[in-house]
Amino acid sequence: MFAIRKKYPNSLIHLLTEKRYISFLTKTKIFDKIIVDNRKDFLLISFLNLLKLLKENFDVIIDLQNSQRTSLYNLFFRLFNKGLVCSSRPFAHLRYKIPIQGKEAARVGLSNQLKMLNINVDLSVNYDWLKVNIKNVITRSIALIIPGVSKGNEYKQWQPEKFAEIAQFCESKNLRICIVGTKSDLLSAKKIIDDRFHGPNFPIHMTLAGEFNLDLTNMKALEDTLGNNFSPFEVFFKGYGMKNYFFQAFYVAVELNEELQSKRSKICEFLSTENDEFMPHLSFYYGKQEEPKKRALLPELPEIEGSFIAETFYLVSFDPKNIEWKILNSIHLGGH
Figure 1 (tube, rainbow, N blue to C red):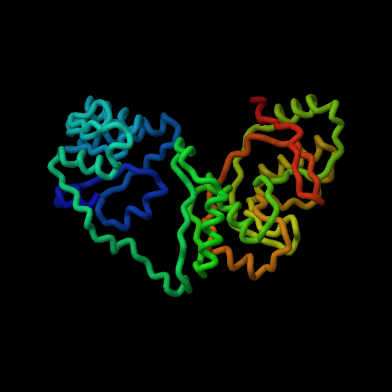
Figure 2: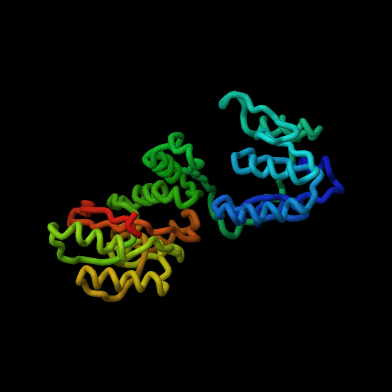
Protein backbone atom coordinates (compact mmCIF):
# COMPACT_ATOMS: atom_id res chain seq x y z
CA MET A 1 0.00 0.00 0.00
CA PHE A 2 2.77 2.39 0.93
CA ALA A 3 4.67 1.48 -2.24
CA ILE A 4 1.62 2.33 -4.36
CA ARG A 5 1.24 5.73 -2.68
CA LYS A 6 4.96 6.39 -3.17
CA LYS A 7 4.61 5.60 -6.89
CA TYR A 8 1.57 7.85 -7.27
CA PRO A 9 2.10 10.65 -4.69
CA ASN A 10 -0.30 13.12 -6.32
CA SER A 11 -2.99 10.70 -7.49
CA LEU A 12 -6.37 9.95 -5.97
CA ILE A 13 -6.24 6.43 -4.58
CA HIS A 14 -9.45 4.59 -3.76
CA LEU A 15 -9.50 1.35 -1.77
CA LEU A 16 -12.15 -1.35 -2.09
CA THR A 17 -12.36 -3.43 1.09
CA GLU A 18 -14.66 -4.90 3.73
CA LYS A 19 -16.28 -2.73 6.38
CA ARG A 20 -14.41 -4.40 9.24
CA TYR A 21 -11.05 -3.15 7.90
CA ILE A 22 -11.97 0.52 7.47
CA SER A 23 -11.02 1.85 10.92
CA PHE A 24 -7.66 0.08 10.72
CA LEU A 25 -6.79 1.15 7.17
CA THR A 26 -7.89 4.75 7.73
CA LYS A 27 -4.95 5.13 10.13
CA THR A 28 -2.50 4.61 7.25
CA LYS A 29 -3.59 7.96 5.72
CA ILE A 30 -2.78 6.48 2.31
CA PHE A 31 -6.21 6.46 0.74
CA ASP A 32 -8.34 9.35 -0.45
CA LYS A 33 -11.48 7.24 -0.32
CA ILE A 34 -12.36 3.83 1.12
CA ILE A 35 -15.28 1.98 -0.47
CA VAL A 36 -17.09 -0.83 1.34
CA ASP A 37 -17.42 -4.16 -0.46
CA ASN A 38 -18.38 -6.95 1.92
CA ARG A 39 -17.79 -10.43 0.56
CA LYS A 40 -20.86 -11.77 2.35
CA ASP A 41 -23.16 -9.24 0.71
CA PHE A 42 -25.80 -10.50 -1.66
CA LEU A 43 -24.41 -10.67 -5.20
CA LEU A 44 -26.88 -8.03 -6.42
CA ILE A 45 -25.53 -5.53 -3.87
CA SER A 46 -21.97 -6.14 -5.04
CA PHE A 47 -23.06 -5.72 -8.66
CA LEU A 48 -24.71 -2.36 -7.88
CA ASN A 49 -21.55 -1.24 -6.09
CA LEU A 50 -19.52 -2.28 -9.13
CA LEU A 51 -21.71 -0.19 -11.44
CA LYS A 52 -20.96 2.86 -9.28
CA LEU A 53 -17.24 2.15 -9.47
CA LEU A 54 -17.31 1.94 -13.26
CA LYS A 55 -18.38 5.59 -13.36
CA GLU A 56 -15.12 6.63 -11.66
CA ASN A 57 -13.01 6.04 -14.81
CA PHE A 58 -9.90 4.86 -12.98
CA ASP A 59 -6.57 5.01 -14.79
CA VAL A 60 -5.14 1.95 -13.01
CA ILE A 61 -6.92 -0.92 -11.20
CA ILE A 62 -4.64 -2.98 -8.95
CA ASP A 63 -6.16 -6.25 -7.74
CA LEU A 64 -4.30 -7.37 -4.61
CA GLN A 65 -7.07 -9.74 -3.51
CA ASN A 66 -6.63 -11.93 -6.59
CA SER A 67 -9.75 -14.01 -5.98
CA GLN A 68 -12.54 -15.42 -8.14
CA ARG A 69 -14.72 -12.53 -6.99
CA THR A 70 -12.23 -9.88 -8.07
CA SER A 71 -11.60 -11.61 -11.40
CA LEU A 72 -15.25 -10.86 -12.18
CA TYR A 73 -14.62 -7.23 -11.24
CA ASN A 74 -11.60 -7.23 -13.53
CA LEU A 75 -13.78 -8.35 -16.42
CA PHE A 76 -16.18 -5.45 -15.93
CA PHE A 77 -13.35 -2.94 -15.56
CA ARG A 78 -11.75 -4.21 -18.74
CA LEU A 79 -15.00 -4.01 -20.70
CA PHE A 80 -16.44 -0.76 -19.36
CA ASN A 81 -13.49 1.22 -17.98
CA LYS A 82 -10.44 2.67 -19.68
CA GLY A 83 -8.13 1.77 -16.78
CA LEU A 84 -5.23 -0.67 -16.91
CA VAL A 85 -5.99 -3.78 -14.84
CA CYS A 86 -3.13 -5.49 -12.98
CA SER A 87 -3.92 -8.83 -11.32
CA SER A 88 -2.94 -12.48 -11.11
CA ARG A 89 -6.49 -13.43 -12.14
CA PRO A 90 -8.06 -13.65 -15.61
CA PHE A 91 -9.11 -10.56 -17.64
CA ALA A 92 -6.15 -8.45 -16.49
CA HIS A 93 -4.10 -6.38 -18.94
CA LEU A 94 -1.02 -7.12 -16.84
CA ARG A 95 -1.34 -10.59 -15.35
CA TYR A 96 1.20 -11.99 -12.93
CA LYS A 97 1.41 -15.76 -13.09
CA ILE A 98 1.61 -17.17 -9.58
CA PRO A 99 3.99 -20.17 -9.22
CA ILE A 100 2.78 -23.51 -7.86
CA GLN A 101 1.39 -23.13 -4.35
CA GLY A 102 4.12 -23.30 -1.75
CA LYS A 103 6.84 -22.07 -4.10
CA GLU A 104 6.35 -18.39 -3.33
CA ALA A 105 5.20 -16.47 -0.26
CA ALA A 106 2.14 -14.25 -0.76
CA ARG A 107 4.16 -11.14 0.12
CA VAL A 108 6.75 -11.97 -2.55
CA GLY A 109 4.04 -12.66 -5.12
CA LEU A 110 2.33 -9.32 -4.52
CA SER A 111 5.70 -7.55 -4.74
CA ASN A 112 6.39 -9.23 -8.08
CA GLN A 113 2.91 -8.32 -9.29
CA LEU A 114 3.49 -4.64 -8.46
CA LYS A 115 6.83 -4.68 -10.30
CA MET A 116 4.81 -5.07 -13.50
CA LEU A 117 3.71 -1.47 -12.85
CA ASN A 118 7.28 -0.43 -11.98
CA ILE A 119 6.32 -0.25 -8.31
CA ASN A 120 9.11 -1.37 -6.01
CA VAL A 121 8.07 -2.61 -2.57
CA ASP A 122 10.23 -1.48 0.34
CA LEU A 123 9.79 -3.93 3.19
CA SER A 124 11.46 -1.54 5.65
CA VAL A 125 8.34 0.63 5.89
CA ASN A 126 7.85 2.59 9.11
CA TYR A 127 4.92 1.09 11.01
CA ASP A 128 4.79 3.65 13.82
CA TRP A 129 1.20 4.45 12.84
CA LEU A 130 0.24 1.09 14.37
CA LYS A 131 1.50 2.02 17.82
CA VAL A 132 -0.98 2.71 20.60
CA ASN A 133 -0.40 3.74 24.19
CA ILE A 134 -1.30 0.78 26.39
CA LYS A 135 0.92 1.52 29.38
CA ASN A 136 -2.08 2.36 31.53
CA VAL A 137 -3.92 -0.78 30.44
CA ILE A 138 -1.24 -3.46 30.35
CA THR A 139 0.66 -4.07 33.57
CA ARG A 140 2.77 -7.03 32.44
CA SER A 141 4.12 -8.62 29.29
CA ILE A 142 1.61 -10.14 26.88
CA ALA A 143 1.56 -13.42 24.98
CA LEU A 144 -0.65 -13.00 21.90
CA ILE A 145 -2.33 -16.23 20.77
CA ILE A 146 -4.05 -16.36 17.37
CA PRO A 147 -5.63 -19.83 17.05
CA GLY A 148 -7.57 -19.28 13.81
CA VAL A 149 -6.92 -20.00 10.16
CA SER A 150 -8.61 -18.67 7.06
CA LYS A 151 -11.81 -20.33 5.86
CA GLY A 152 -11.07 -23.38 3.75
CA ASN A 153 -7.71 -23.98 5.42
CA GLU A 154 -9.00 -25.62 8.59
CA TYR A 155 -6.68 -28.57 7.97
CA LYS A 156 -3.79 -26.29 8.94
CA GLN A 157 -5.24 -25.47 12.36
CA TRP A 158 -3.64 -26.75 15.52
CA GLN A 159 -5.76 -28.68 18.00
CA PRO A 160 -7.22 -26.57 20.85
CA GLU A 161 -5.25 -28.76 23.30
CA LYS A 162 -1.99 -27.48 21.79
CA PHE A 163 -3.01 -23.86 22.28
CA ALA A 164 -4.04 -24.71 25.83
CA GLU A 165 -0.52 -26.06 26.49
CA ILE A 166 0.97 -22.82 25.16
CA ALA A 167 -1.36 -20.78 27.35
CA GLN A 168 -0.40 -22.77 30.44
CA PHE A 169 3.30 -22.34 29.64
CA CYS A 170 2.89 -18.58 29.17
CA GLU A 171 0.98 -18.34 32.42
CA SER A 172 3.82 -20.15 34.22
CA LYS A 173 6.13 -17.39 32.93
CA ASN A 174 3.79 -14.71 34.36
CA LEU A 175 2.73 -13.61 30.88
CA ARG A 176 -0.70 -12.13 30.34
CA ILE A 177 -2.55 -14.11 27.66
CA CYS A 178 -4.56 -12.38 24.94
CA ILE A 179 -6.56 -14.48 22.47
CA VAL A 180 -7.30 -12.94 19.07
CA GLY A 181 -9.75 -14.36 16.57
CA THR A 182 -13.26 -14.56 15.19
CA LYS A 183 -16.39 -16.47 16.12
CA SER A 184 -14.87 -19.54 14.47
CA ASP A 185 -12.17 -19.44 17.16
CA LEU A 186 -14.61 -19.63 20.07
CA LEU A 187 -13.92 -23.33 20.58
CA SER A 188 -10.19 -22.72 20.92
CA ALA A 189 -10.81 -19.80 23.28
CA LYS A 190 -13.21 -21.88 25.37
CA LYS A 191 -10.68 -24.71 25.58
CA ILE A 192 -8.07 -22.31 26.94
CA ILE A 193 -10.55 -20.96 29.51
CA ASP A 194 -11.53 -24.49 30.54
CA ASP A 195 -7.91 -25.47 31.04
CA ARG A 196 -7.26 -22.31 33.05
CA PHE A 197 -10.19 -22.96 35.37
CA HIS A 198 -10.32 -26.75 34.92
CA GLY A 199 -13.98 -26.67 33.99
CA PRO A 200 -16.02 -29.47 32.40
CA ASN A 201 -16.01 -29.83 28.64
CA PHE A 202 -19.34 -29.12 26.92
CA PRO A 203 -20.51 -27.71 23.58
CA ILE A 204 -21.08 -23.96 23.29
CA HIS A 205 -24.83 -23.55 23.12
CA MET A 206 -27.84 -21.37 23.95
CA THR A 207 -30.62 -23.03 25.95
CA LEU A 208 -34.11 -22.09 24.78
CA ALA A 209 -36.14 -24.41 27.02
CA GLY A 210 -35.35 -26.27 30.21
CA GLU A 211 -36.58 -29.64 31.43
CA PHE A 212 -39.60 -31.24 29.81
CA ASN A 213 -41.04 -34.72 29.43
CA LEU A 214 -40.60 -36.28 26.00
CA ASP A 215 -42.31 -39.34 24.64
CA LEU A 216 -39.72 -40.76 22.23
CA THR A 217 -42.49 -42.27 20.11
CA ASN A 218 -43.60 -38.74 19.27
CA MET A 219 -40.13 -37.57 18.22
CA LYS A 220 -40.97 -37.37 14.50
CA ALA A 221 -44.14 -35.35 15.15
CA LEU A 222 -42.22 -32.95 17.40
CA GLU A 223 -39.47 -32.60 14.79
CA ASP A 224 -42.02 -31.68 12.10
CA THR A 225 -43.82 -29.25 14.41
CA LEU A 226 -40.70 -27.36 15.45
CA GLY A 227 -38.96 -27.54 12.08
CA ASN A 228 -41.94 -26.23 10.12
CA ASN A 229 -43.03 -23.55 12.59
CA PHE A 230 -39.64 -21.90 13.04
CA SER A 231 -37.29 -20.34 10.52
CA PRO A 232 -33.59 -19.52 11.07
CA PHE A 233 -33.15 -16.37 13.15
CA GLU A 234 -30.39 -13.95 14.06
CA VAL A 235 -28.99 -13.79 17.59
CA PHE A 236 -27.00 -10.75 18.75
CA PHE A 237 -24.09 -10.83 21.20
CA LYS A 238 -23.94 -8.46 24.18
CA GLY A 239 -20.51 -9.27 25.59
CA TYR A 240 -19.22 -11.43 28.43
CA GLY A 241 -21.10 -12.05 31.66
CA MET A 242 -20.70 -14.08 34.84
CA LYS A 243 -22.70 -15.11 37.88
CA ASN A 244 -22.11 -16.88 41.15
CA TYR A 245 -24.05 -19.86 39.82
CA PHE A 246 -22.50 -23.10 38.58
CA PHE A 247 -24.28 -23.23 35.20
CA GLN A 248 -23.91 -19.50 34.51
CA ALA A 249 -20.42 -19.04 35.86
CA PHE A 250 -18.99 -17.54 32.64
CA TYR A 251 -20.94 -16.85 29.47
CA VAL A 252 -21.52 -14.57 26.50
CA ALA A 253 -24.76 -12.64 26.97
CA VAL A 254 -27.32 -12.51 24.17
CA GLU A 255 -29.81 -9.74 23.40
CA LEU A 256 -33.35 -10.69 24.39
CA ASN A 257 -35.26 -8.95 21.60
CA GLU A 258 -38.88 -9.37 20.60
CA GLU A 259 -38.14 -12.08 18.04
CA LEU A 260 -36.14 -14.23 20.43
CA GLN A 261 -38.70 -13.84 23.21
CA SER A 262 -41.46 -14.85 20.79
CA LYS A 263 -39.60 -17.99 19.72
CA ARG A 264 -38.92 -18.88 23.32
CA SER A 265 -42.62 -18.57 24.20
CA LYS A 266 -43.68 -20.70 21.23
CA ILE A 267 -41.17 -23.43 22.09
CA CYS A 268 -42.37 -23.55 25.69
CA GLU A 269 -45.93 -23.82 24.41
CA PHE A 270 -45.09 -26.68 22.04
CA LEU A 271 -43.15 -28.54 24.73
CA SER A 272 -45.72 -27.83 27.45
CA THR A 273 -43.02 -26.47 29.73
CA GLU A 274 -42.92 -23.38 31.94
CA ASN A 275 -42.15 -20.07 30.23
CA ASP A 276 -40.39 -18.57 33.23
CA GLU A 277 -37.75 -15.83 33.37
CA PHE A 278 -35.42 -16.11 30.38
CA MET A 279 -31.79 -14.92 30.33
CA PRO A 280 -30.37 -16.05 26.95
CA HIS A 281 -26.64 -16.66 26.82
CA LEU A 282 -23.90 -18.87 25.37
CA SER A 283 -22.30 -20.84 28.19
CA PHE A 284 -18.49 -20.84 28.25
CA TYR A 285 -17.61 -22.25 31.65
CA TYR A 286 -19.38 -24.18 34.38
CA GLY A 287 -17.93 -24.05 37.88
CA LYS A 288 -17.53 -22.20 41.16
CA GLN A 289 -14.50 -20.09 40.35
CA GLU A 290 -14.09 -16.89 42.37
CA GLU A 291 -15.39 -13.81 40.58
CA PRO A 292 -12.13 -11.78 40.86
CA LYS A 293 -10.29 -14.55 39.00
CA LYS A 294 -12.95 -14.62 36.31
CA ARG A 295 -12.86 -10.85 35.90
CA ALA A 296 -9.07 -10.93 35.70
CA LEU A 297 -9.44 -13.16 32.65
CA LEU A 298 -11.67 -10.72 30.72
CA PRO A 299 -8.86 -8.54 29.23
CA GLU A 300 -7.25 -11.67 27.82
CA LEU A 301 -10.32 -12.83 25.90
CA PRO A 302 -11.21 -11.89 22.31
CA GLU A 303 -13.90 -9.27 21.92
CA ILE A 304 -17.22 -10.88 21.04
CA GLU A 305 -19.48 -8.69 18.92
CA GLY A 306 -21.94 -9.00 16.08
CA SER A 307 -24.34 -11.89 15.69
CA PHE A 308 -24.87 -15.44 14.47
CA ILE A 309 -27.68 -17.27 12.69
CA ALA A 310 -29.44 -19.99 14.68
CA GLU A 311 -30.39 -22.70 12.17
CA THR A 312 -30.78 -25.84 14.25
CA PHE A 313 -32.58 -26.91 17.42
CA TYR A 314 -31.16 -29.82 19.40
CA LEU A 315 -33.14 -32.05 21.72
CA VAL A 316 -30.71 -33.03 24.44
CA SER A 317 -30.66 -35.41 27.36
CA PHE A 318 -28.50 -33.86 30.08
CA ASP A 319 -26.97 -35.42 33.18
CA PRO A 320 -26.26 -32.45 35.52
CA LYS A 321 -24.36 -34.60 37.99
CA ASN A 322 -21.69 -35.71 35.52
CA ILE A 323 -22.14 -32.77 33.08
CA GLU A 324 -22.80 -35.18 30.23
CA TRP A 325 -24.79 -34.46 27.09
CA LYS A 326 -26.54 -36.77 24.71
CA ILE A 327 -28.11 -35.33 21.56
CA LEU A 328 -31.38 -37.13 20.89
CA ASN A 329 -32.21 -35.33 17.67
CA SER A 330 -31.38 -32.27 15.58
CA ILE A 331 -34.13 -30.21 14.00
CA HIS A 332 -33.25 -27.94 11.09
CA LEU A 333 -35.38 -24.82 11.11
CA GLY A 334 -37.57 -23.97 8.16
CA GLY A 335 -38.04 -27.61 7.20
CA HIS A 336 -34.62 -27.79 5.45
